[in-house]
Image (cartoon, rainbow, N blue to C red; front, side):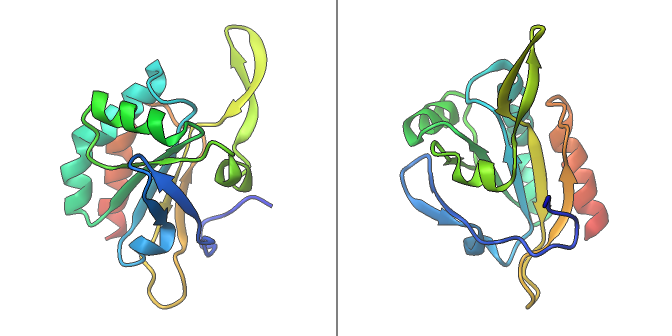
Length: 159
């Protein structure tokens, strides 16, 4: 069953671009912007990641933590982060454990051919106010350009 706004978000643990272990619960005192992208250093993913980079200080000022997740390994995430000076953590999910838990492997149309891939999706998760980290909002069909600003506006309204 798909998650819905108001659901408690189950904790998870992955490695970041530096090989450090990171859990969702590490950020229980802040809202979390959890954005899933198909593949590091591809055109749409670069637009989306750089949008979060360019909006990062405003997102941070709104109290949010930004985490990008893809099926890339730690090494690819580090290369992507360095190449584009991304100021937030990128989490590696090469076994697609979390991607599958969130049911994000979906049919996609790639140049007229249907293939399975990771669906670009963003989850906004609340700070834990004693009852767990709750899902505030899902962006299920993200368009990379302008998405970070859209997320920032939602966080401002939620404050």
